[in-house]
Amino acid sequence: MLEAYFPILLFILVGIAIGGVLLGLGSLVSPSRPDPDKLSPYECGFEAFEDARMKFDVRYYLVAILFILFDLEIAFLFPWAVVLPEIGFFGFAAMMVFLAILVVGFVYEWKKGALEWE
Image 1 (cartoon, rainbow, N blue to C red):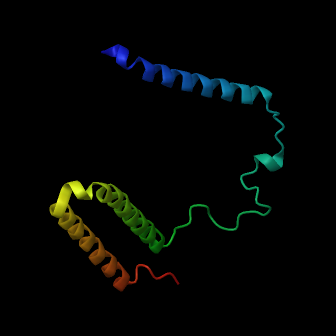
Image 2: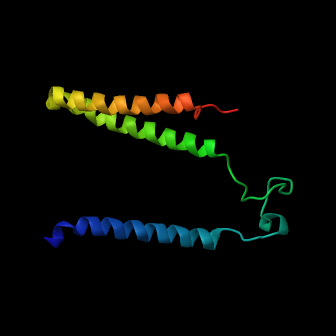
């Protein structure tokens, strides 16, 4: 049974070996000329004017969570559309309930002003 997994193990080992060889070759061939400007924490042309650990607005995180939620909804819709003929009316009804719950949540967030960005 283990010989069935040998090609996978070989593929992983060859990938790790090639990656290691390329990293080693890059570190040997590349020039190393550090100067104070390259070693400074900011290379954008001016000094930082605020703390890097400043707080973001909560609306940023809310929009990100909503994006992930609706992105996952689309990820569920594609396989459902492919197997719709096999699952029949029950699968269609289950997906409509799923979409209705998501639409209710979306309308709630919209009415609460979560999508407003001022």
